[in-house]
Amino acid sequence: MARLVTPIMEKHGDGAIVSISTFSAFEPDPGFPISSSLRAALASFAKLYADRYAATGIPMNNVLPGFIESYSVSDENLARIPSGRAGTVEEIASAVAFLVSPAASYITGQNLRVDGGITRSV
Image (cartoon, rainbow, N blue to C red; front, side, top):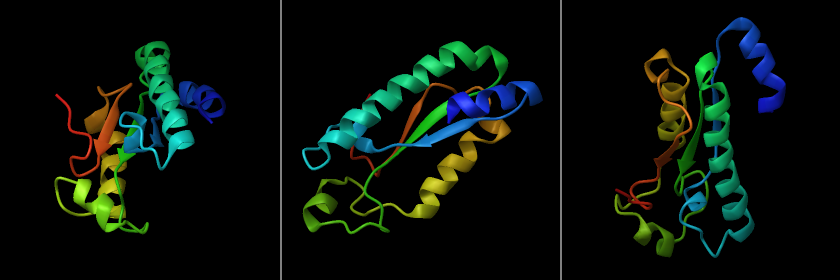
């Protein structure tokens, strides 16, 4: 998709790309081995895209949701989340809305973890 929309965004001098990934891109989960691997590749792609297109003003970022209440979350998985609850679709949408807004124009190549603390990092 990035390959298709980038020329259009360059022509218009505006745009942003946000991919929805998963927390397991950085904390591989045995329950999602293939997804974890593919999402780690997407995280790397966002960095490479940023290297190439940041100067044109086209940011690319990923949102990495944790367990979301619209998907059945087991008690075992809920216990792993420091915030003690699953996230909401609205919380993910708010993160995406921020990343495509002018307020985030200096943010690119990032992987924003919206996961209730399940992938805590320094």
